Length: 266
View 1: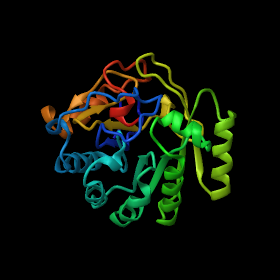
View 2: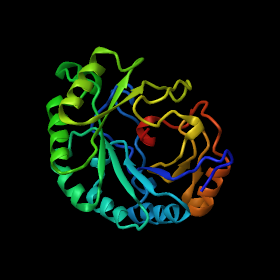
View 3: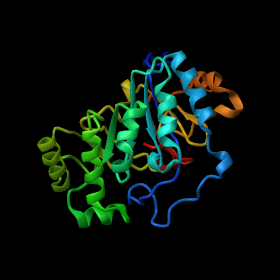
């Protein structure tokens, strides 16, 4: 399927929860965020049915995100349900990796193909400072278990202030090269201010070739990360919401003052 600018839209990012076990400084405040009510969060059957429709319309790449997707109860079951949808060629997940040591193998067996894991530094103290709660050793163990489970290619998402030449980014690059992983340098962004940049080593931020739609955990389709436009799949139905998102996907982003990274999944 194509938008009005003839961009082929084949990538769906699904946020399955607004909850997270970390409090990364560039993502949310130390006290966290107001959480959605249980009934506002999409049920598994709603997520799967929406995804079936999206795949029938042309989506073939799906990524599970959060918040932190591994805190969603039943995430392995949901992954298996999504993996069973014929037409999905690429099923991935973005995670902070803290719980991957216990989930990587079950997820791989359920049909997950690959993971992107947040890793901004190889310095234990800095890691804790950035995440406010996390232990670097937990993330590194999760990465190793994911590697052993065959969730390849493993991509490390490294948030940078300017570019990949920063000392922490360089340490992540060396770590990745030593283990056969890939690195994506993500410039620190601000939705409300409209500050964003292109992802080095990835496709994010390339507005002219953007191929994605986003489903929030409370059932809103976002045609653009840096836009207030959204369509409620519960009110409109999956097909109509997707059609409207395609018709109104902007040529490039501006600002988003109604959402935040923690509930969109980036």
